[in-house]
Amino acid sequence: MTSVRHAPPAVPRPTFDVEQVRRDFPLLQTKVRGKPLVYLDNAATSQKPRSVIARTEQYYATENANVHRGVYELSERATAAYEDAREKARGFLNAASAREIVFVRGTTEAINLVASSFGRKELQPGDEVLISAMEHHSNIVPWQLVCAERDATLRVVPMNSRGELEMDEFAKLLSANTKLVALAHVSNSLGTINPVADVVRLAHAKGVPVLVDGAQAAPHGPIDVRALGVDFYTVSGHKMFGPTGIGLLYGTAERLEALPPYQGGGDMIKTVTFAKTTYAEPPAKFEAGTPNIAGAIGLGAAIDYLRGLDWEAVQTHERDLLAYATERLGQLPEVELVGTAAHKASVVSFTVRGVHAHDVGTIVDQEGVAIRTGHHCTQPVMDFFGVPATARASFAFYNTRADVDALVSAVQRVTRVFAG
Amino acid sequence: MTDLSDLYQQIIVEHNRAPRNFKKLAHPTRAAEGANPLCGDQIKLEVELAGDRISDIGFQGSGCAISQASASLLTGAVQGKSTADAQELFRQVHAMLTSAPGTPVDTAGLGKLAALAGVRQFPVRVKCASLPWHTLRAALQSAAEPVTTE
Image (cartoon, rainbow over all chains, first blue to last red; front, side, top):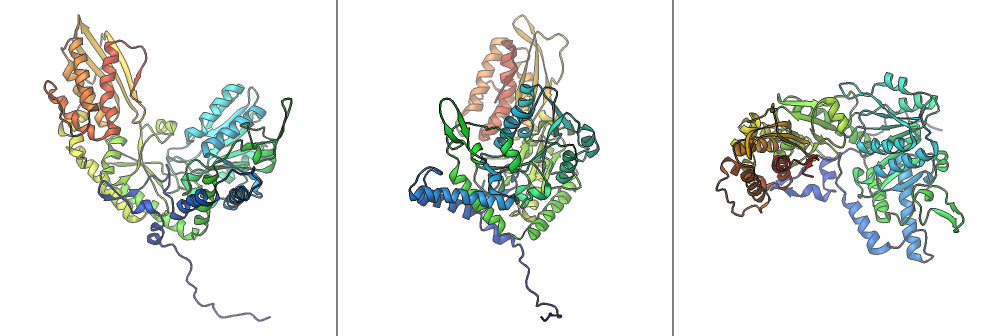
């Protein structure tokens, strides 16, 4: 055995070429209002690479049949493609088994599924569900509904003025009555990255399962549900460069087996008689009816696309965008940033002094800049910061510093319009 | 091609900055609240009637420039009018806001309210401009429920 002592030849590391990546997204080549589109509403939904659009079309053109039913070849092909997408999703989340991946419509449905099934089985009067102050309405309202039904209580872990979870308060609120913790991995309106692994450790020490809403985390890189230790994890396909109407619920095999079904119907049963029905094993148990087959396959193509990126380089790029946007917007005297956590994804929420967020949105739209304005489905977050609404620029890996420059100059126009 | 200066006319920017009749009335005879969930616009209108005449009117609330300026302009326009004339003004403004961009606007009798015509080019913002007017109509009809323009 010989060992090579000299340094290996310099192999160029795979890097991230944003201009090349942008060419993969047809919509980024378009103009709005006569100006090149500057798309900065990625936290609402992301644009789709050509490969996802093509894969969806290919499915309808060459493979369309119902899954898990026909004995004919076309149905076998559709089923294979659908299940192949499940395996890709398993890989993206690093789940132990594809049986732990349930296809749903999106994060909203995933949370409703767990709230409904877990709540009906586990919640008793006096029990508590713990969420955080920065949750999206989709991780608040399903718990309010089930808590009202089960006479349980919803408790809220506060955040500090930077938009960071108060971990001491979390530890205090975690009690013998707590039956579940439900938390965003990344806040959609503030960009805060929550310390999920720490939350899981504290919760599991008291035997409490944890659901993590990963809708805003998955667009920023592959997830490791086993390293995080979560019991449930949810993502939305359309926010991670896949189609709308498809998402994932990850649940550990043990947790999914213990949950009662969500919706009843075809595909989720073993046997049906009028006297008694037995249910299929997960994930089929939770996939009643014909699923969004094309959506699942398209999501699989999006995951393939994401797997092809050099994530270390992508994350460096996104960190640069966040730092640059924070710096440039922060330099505008009339702009106030909302959400300044130490650990953030590439989301910048802000207000312009004396100008309502919707006026900001209308004016920057005239410059071809698409941002979200409003409460971002997080009204309690707006109340906490004492603002009716914010403007939010949310960046994906295909955004550039030039996009930030366009945003900043559009915001400067806002000031000019209102200066009269 | 839409033009921002049609939407944010000087008079709208100015009324947003310094809204008229932004006040609570001591003795309101009619009141209504309105909300536009899209923008988070909220408005409370109070009307004091002397017989059939609007002797005083005030609004409170918060929201985008279009809704606030529209409310401010409204209070100035209906002050001293009969309720029937105010209803007629509602009809006229509503017709103007919901007409197709580019079509002629009958601004006769609208005065400063004609500044709101530019909103037509921005369909998602029409509700902001019309909210105070729907709220006024609710107040005059004394609707018990808050109005919404969603």
